[in-house]
Length: 547
Image 1 (cartoon, rainbow, N blue to C red):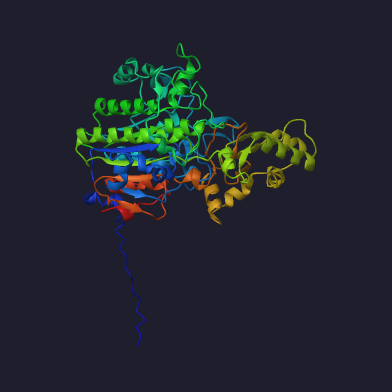
Image 2: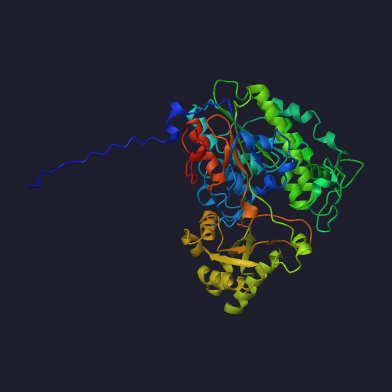
């Protein structure tokens, strides 16, 4: 006979996760996150034979290297990439959908780290801060967990790289403005004395007149492009062939173009590494009985790639020089803290598209090319006027980083809804050479993963910052005019697939081929060091590499 007496089932949930298991947490004196702007993963494989033992090769051999790490958003640019790395969240959560956008409510143009309420320190210019970033980063959570005893310092050549790595609660973020490292009043009232001393040393200006020369033998360039390809840029006095003079447009004295030439050379990364060492010493990072975080983002690789392309001799030389700089910095950490005592991570914010002209030189019939931005907006204007009649003002307010914003006044004067206008313009864009897909705002709001591309578009959509229409170009197409240089940004792996390596205690060295993303870095560092996950994180803990 079955009893009909009621009974209770008691379920106890301990809720134990990696950040809570403090007894298993690793507490290194210093966590170092190195980001190299514009380095696709394939550089490690293609150039690996030219690397020494102490840089990339050391990280790959002694660390956990995730060979299939890629960004899962649709806009692979510097701002969005750096915002993902330590937040574990994409633009739909952290708000950094692109480098620039239009605020839907105010209709104002916004730069991702602009802040009119703070001042630049160390140079003249607009204020910068993480005010537009939403959520927290690993560094923010580290500060909270330590009662704000941990220091978080972020440095880069670019303001957006340093600021978005540092997060909301960083002690400091520094970036370069011509010959100086600067910060903003968001972080401090005055530029620290050690930064002023570094700036007054004259190191940045000491490179004027130097020559960027080849260090590799001719045989190392087998399989690469010629050294004088007509589609290379070579601006700011650099020229298209080695050696490249670091003088800018005037060889007799420094002009603003000198700093652009310097940034397009390994010398810029040498300077940043020297500044990073100065930060470790002056801030006593890792020496105060608590875990600190240092974020370093090298930007020169990005400038070289834009100018010369991923198959150039300059990119190989730049990669080998970067390898040496990283080896030297890892050696500096060894001397200061002991080999293996720091937790080191390395990744990149995005990759790079091949030069269309390079592809066609080897395969004339290849489907590749540059899409003039005016052809995008012009197609939309033509289609909307053909359907609804010519207006007195343009239909398009602005197109920014693949987001097309419709002019509300024009729509109102023609009594056309934004949804109807977006559908008409989108249908027209699909007929334009080089366009692969178009999403209206309604599509973006419902693009929850019907395909891999849908998910990436959803990750790059924010209702207050995205446009009425979003378009994706076909592989090996990108926006641009003329016939020099290249760029990045599309959702394909040549722009999205990047290195992701972690080295230190608590990790199992090896190559891991499973699906991963730079969005996993922040949560994984949190798990290793026993602090809470970043708020809004979408990345996972890379548990396969944890001891």
